Length: 168
Image 1: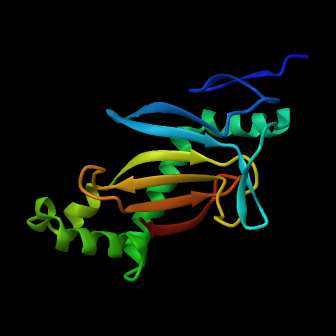
Image 2: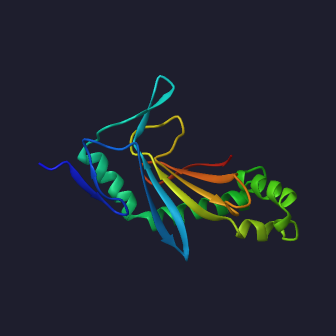
């Protein structure tokens, strides 16, 4: 049996000799979103690379890659809900911070700044890294050229939102 496994966006990988990270690009609404798959796990409070995974782990990852549009829609709904319902939430904090400190955003309303937040990265973690709480992370920003801060939406292995946070 071949150890080669074909993943959408990433082509063939060897399930018995994995690299620690695989990278690709996904076109979404006229923009590029970087994709990465990270094969690591938390052991004794330290991230350790995993060199092989089962076909079942790869099948689950493939399913999520095939549903990438659905996951992006779920993450966008989560940030809209955070914006609308949580005055102390990650989105409000992100917008208020950036409106105050980034000249290009000062003339915009808070709603306009929020509407400019867009996805830039989707990271997959198909091996348990439960300390961070997410099977995948979708990062949103007003622009990578303007800030290192992101609004990160964590989704679990079922594709459900587990957290929306502000990160640097």
